[in-house]
Length: 249
Image (tube, rainbow, N blue to C red):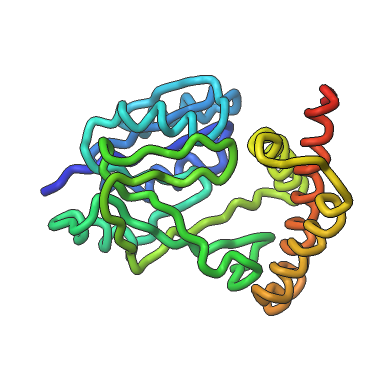
């Protein structure tokens, strides 16, 4: 049977490490890629995983591209620490790898936020390429929301990851602020002169798209909150582009 390496990137994920490793216990190798955690994640991972490697964190795509070639097996299942492989997804992965028709597969995500399942709010069709052949796939070099570039055909699995990126609201805001800095580095290269369009129109459109067009209103207060956060992140992205250009933190 085709063997598989599960890769799990971590950085201070002590609250997730046990459950995420347990969800991939069917993998032939569990490879933890730790970003110099200081909360006990590294030590716990050493107890539970097949192998743990460490490297100072630059950005997600860089970290994953460094780890992928170190996997022992040809097929990779990459799982973020805040995701879980459900029993149904596990069965489908194992069945798929008996006779794979593609070199990579999209996997959808069942998103949760503030303790609630998110059905709309722009997250309804969320999917990521996470099951793939090691030597034919690589992440694009972007600081945020990089996707895998695939040398071959891509399929899609029917079952989804369980995904809960939320710890506390303050922690989520911290994460969004980090993302805004990383996005600013990408957008600085492709954004011309900053105008009210970037600081007013684009954030408003971000809210409108998530709340109205993508039916975030159907998720109640959670959808309203996500839509507001989307507007906030867009505003912060361009504010931080402005700060970068001024040479200010």
